[in-house]
Image (tube, rainbow, N blue to C red; front, side, top):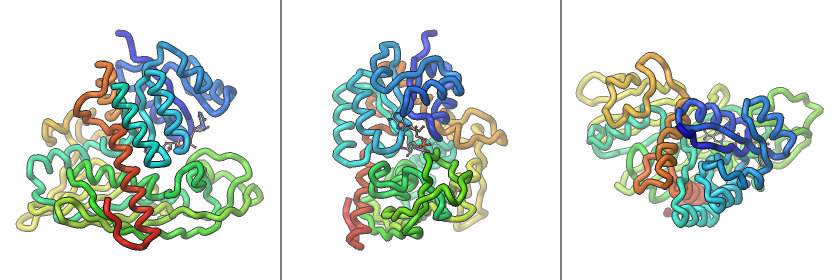
Length: 381
Ligand SMILES: NC(=O)c1ccc[n+]([C@@H]2O[C@H](COP(=O)([O-])OP(=O)(O)OC[C@H]3O[C@@H](n4cnc5c(N)ncnc54)[C@H](O)[C@@H]3O)[C@@H](O)[C@H]2O)c1
């Protein structure tokens, strides 16, 4: 079998997660990578066991490379995804798809013109129980959605000495917690419920108005190693914490809380979706269990086991119940669907995976949330 040859751009935290997930697919070979300098690219290629390393421009000149993954800081996503599509290659971009809404719009248009496969790495949709909740809702088991409570909490920016490029709007965008993790939460909520968010009312808080920036570069999640003398004071303008009230197109309501300063919450996305028949509750830190609430009878606990799932949800489960699947598996399942499309050479009409259009939608919601916080009032989407 001729394997699809892939290049990965950016190999900090999430790039190697893409590489690992891709290596678990039978029809894909990670053939090349690209980094911020040729030297770093060569050393990363050696440590990750990848044969070839290039500058970004040279990577795009390689005729055998059919698909490129963009795993760089946010401000590079637009220009790099655009260049990948213009080079005639399929593109898988990290979230957020771009920094500005008009850039995302342009990418959606360009991707449609080329017909190339385009995907955004909203991998949290691929927790098996997220797919199962979606299928259960589609089969009418939840009933009409009455209300939604969602949260996404982390603690890796808890201390004022915690620092990353995500704290700098020119690299990350004008929103931080909402754009970085709130986007996953909003995507999963619309994905599972099938609802569209129609209006938002947001209230942000920046806990650390000044942070201590390391005087040397640090990769994501590795800032805990530095000493006090290695820092300089910088003002912070983006949110550590956000509360957002939501209105949906069925007339009902929801609320989300997002924080990057919640001690002990390492990476916890929680959902509680109350419907007219049942309530579904799920927590990404215990991804193999889902709570089902009943008014007139015992509450239930559904374990992730393909034999207990609806057939439509089984394709994103690779192991029997009790053999836990977690964060790294979500990317594998997403890429499995993306590379099935790449095998056909073009974007499917109704893709099962998140596309550039979904990336645009999340940027739109994020922009409206930012606007609402600025105005301290409801904003329609
Ligand atoms: N879907 C998810 O669950 C998830 C999780 C983490 C990060 N992300 C997204 O992935 C992206 C990267 O985040 P990260 O945490 O890996 O960041 P990171 O800082 O750890 O890594 C970014 C990498 O990009 C490289 N880079 C910078 N400029 C480059 C250039 N011009 N060309 C090539 N490489 C370049 C850096 O050297 C670094 O290795 C972000 O957009 C983030 O939102 C998504």
